[in-house]
Image (cartoon, rainbow, N blue to C red; front, top):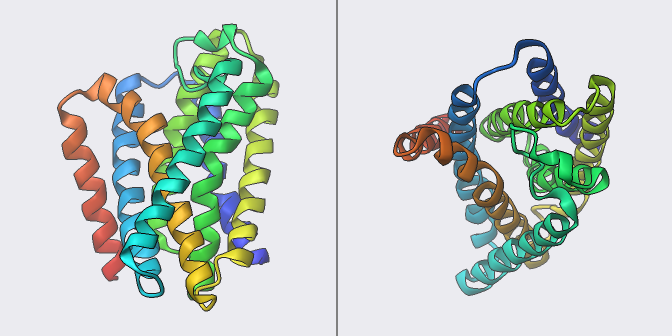
Length: 240
């Protein structure tokens, strides 16, 4: 469990790195969008090869599909509630967060990080952390930290406040990874398969809701190619 906690925290630590980059270097939206698209592709590959594929070994296709949908709906409802409370612009790099609730922004960032960290815990159970998943988590968290922190900086948040927020998210992500280690036991048969499918759906919904829109807004038609490139890298890393 401690190993899962460590890897979950390490993957989420890219948020802190992204925040510091935003405050010290002021990166362009183009750079952030490219990293977002690549990270999305890597995570889609991890969902396909390490969650859905494993779930199908223990459960029928129809049940796996159902729980993938339930996971997606659960994430979407949570994201919708937080958006209505002022957390919908938490990733905006231009400062739209100024009109939002600080608590909703923090909770929204926590919500984004839970599915991917939860799944990291599973890969530790399967014999060692997944390199492709860890890379995808880092590549999705780095631009998220940069984009969100750029907006928070523009909204007037001091650096120490942003660092404290991301430190809390890193801690929750590490705990989520430990929870994934405890709950996503591959030997738990059908129950484990259902949890795997649920986590896969939540993770896919997170990618579609929070990463792809920002990447496409900046990169346009190149987004698809970048996502597929990330997916190809995930496939290659899985074969290693």
